[in-house]
Length: 376
Image (cartoon, rainbow, N blue to C red; front, side, top):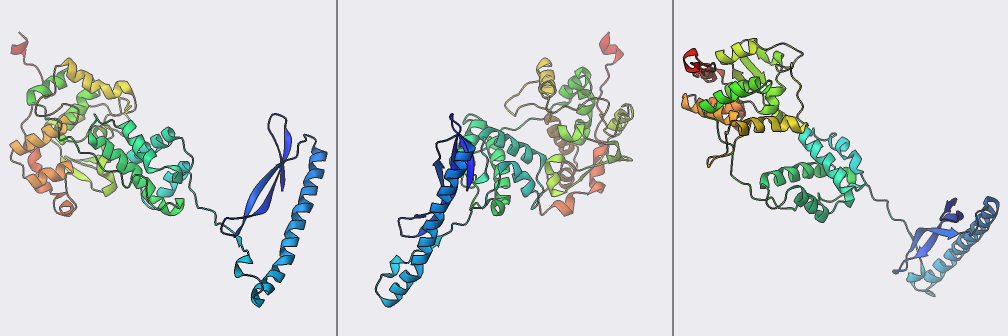
């Protein structure tokens, strides 16, 4: 039994365990609260002691009657239903949402994006335990993040990330299934970014401030995504070969090796060496709104727009690289290995085919500087 003060009057309440009868005749332990009607601690303790005595007397009386009832049932005087057993419910295993990521990491390493999406989910739903998340809550959250007018790809990616965390923690949370498991995927818009033309890239290179000028140059000759370009380190460059583990596919452990074009080699040699990153002379702030919008603002300024073939973004440089490799006659399996587009069955066969991939060093150079004649 315990005493606690509650309410505006600060009256003491006594909490103690009692036995109640269920509709099916079984007995069950339950917690009972009694308002003692006083804010005086001495009086409250005296009333609590009286309740304890009465509660103990009731339990002893019930235990004293139990053997006699069992004898009567054995003799056929009473029905077997008169024997009442105490039903102890096993406490349900529960897991807090705040602890879910740490628990999931015990079974499988989670990507940075998955962790970020799960933290955003916890912040929005404001629930405490995993088993409080129902399929309705899960679906409502996804619809709020991705309206019907949005692209189904983002909806599916968020659902997949959250479902992964819930599946990994089923054993620890005591849940039977993930609330995201039965939510169907949305159809994905097939619209993709288009490649930049050589003329568009030259305009971007001449107009872009740093670090976007150097970032565009690296992506144009390597096909790396924006994050991989900005996180590229000097120790990943050995001679004329760049070896990196793309962030998007890092969970598969598939690195890519890209021979460096002579024009890119010259550009890298001219960069200032500050820290471990190739672009370490400039801050990398992917969470900053101004940073995320900088390249798009540059494209709008240069009037490089979306068209029927796709939209334009930094990743268009990746498409440009693949398009130029195809035009130069580089074998398709080598291109797949360069950009990391390799299926599970092809990974070991083509990921490090440097012999064919060295054709990338024969891609034509781009005339980046304005000629004196054109200026006149």
